[in-house]
Image (cartoon, rainbow, N blue to C red; front, side):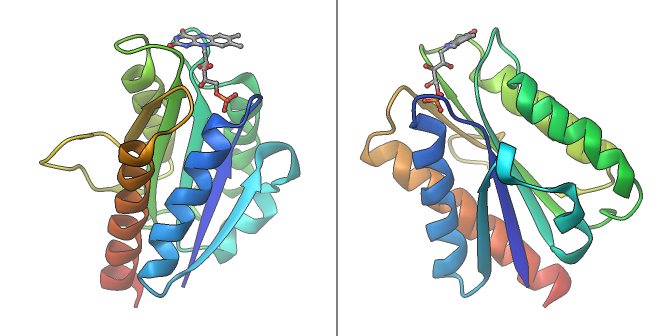
Length: 157
Ligand SMILES: Cc1cc2nc3c(=O)[nH]c(=O)nc-3n(C[C@H](O)[C@H](O)[C@H](O)COP(=O)(O)O)c2cc1C
């Protein structure tokens, strides 16, 4: 079982979140592969059980590079059906686009037919963090990774 975490990051905040999400995945005994978007290939998609996308918030939207990855993923349209999806985002401020960015990422994953688990506690849509992730944000990211890995095991284990 493998979880693919693809992120973009210019100043390192989303990158830190990506590694914390991976820690959570690994804590559940599932393999995590973390790639910055410019080093990630959509050709990895057929072999993974889950795709988690992370982006800095750019004008309330994912970065152009992440959108480019999503657009390239059409090569495998239909092949991600039933796999587990999730998203996280790093913003500069509060209430300034993190949730809209996460939802934009999740919409693309839903169009791929992926399964997305919400959260009844905090961070309903995924993991959001303002600026450099503090310990609370890191823990939120770890929890997201754990939840995804647990669902992967339920569906594909
Ligand atoms: C082009 C651009 C647009 C941005 N737009 C927003 C925005 O709409 N809302 C916000 O809260 N932060 C915005 N920011 C700030 C970044 O989302 C924030 O600094 C984030 O933590 C950067 O993540 P990174 O360190 O992974 O690159 C913007 C930054 C840039 C460069």
